[in-house]
Amino acid sequence: MDTTLLVMAAGMGSRFGGLKQIAPMGKNGEIILDFSVYDAIKAGFNKAVFIIKKEIEHDFREAAGKRIEKMIDTEYVFQQIDSMLPAGFTVPDGRTKPWGTGHAVLCAKDAVKTPFAAINADDYYGRKSFELIHDALTNGSEICMAGFRLGNTLTDNGTVSRGVCEIENNMLKSVTEHTALDKNCGFPMDTVVSMNMWGFNPSIFAELESRFEGFLSNLSNPEKEEFFLPFVVDDLIKVRNQKVDAYISDDKWYGVTYKEDTPTVRAALQKLMEEGYYDGI
Image (cartoon, rainbow, N blue to C red; front, side, top):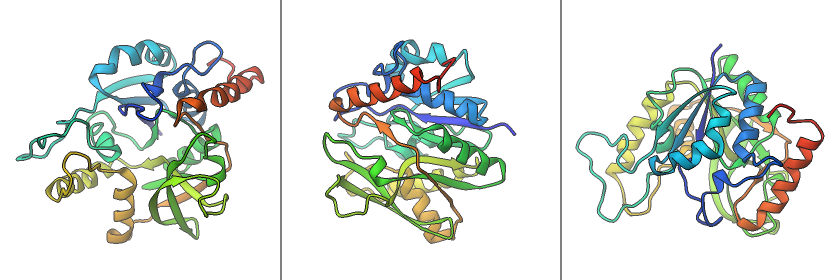
């Protein structure tokens, strides 16, 4: 079965202080995304679609695109502030950025025709996570997620936002966004959290379209509100009784939420390369 890796790479790393998606991490200048694509290919994905801003296209292709295009069938789509706006809607005065992760996935509607995994460009998820999602999609799962243990997703350099998951009988029952999480946040460190690693059937695009229109119709803060992917999944669970298969990965997550995270992430990924885990990347 054909499967697609959909990578959300349009967001600017404001806390990181730049385009964290293309910060070099590997010993030969590889970025986090190189490792994710390599793991996805090993898991069985055979196409990659990157959601980026038009203005970073050149830098993105130079930093990773040209390498990745040699590894897997690759396509680019652009998330702009006016992308996929429903008929009759215009960009609100004062709005300067696109509409969030749900909007990002919706922008890929015309490029993705197979079951797909959706991930962040600047998160390292580990190969097992891709295998879990790929196996679920090829076995007919409509929506699935790979969750991580909270303690495996924290940084020593500040707080993070995570979707805290309620799971029952291997099904996701709810996902609730929490901000300012750290080692002293009160949640047990084995709490399952979402790191925006989802598996979907293409039917999700129709759900995103209808909900995006509803979101735009009820804005209370037009300059800042975002259409988040976990909110859509949570709504489908509550309103449609949608079954969402939940898998838990014990892989260590790495990410560059803050610039100070860079040395730790770089050292961990370079160690994996030295151990031969990423031969041929």
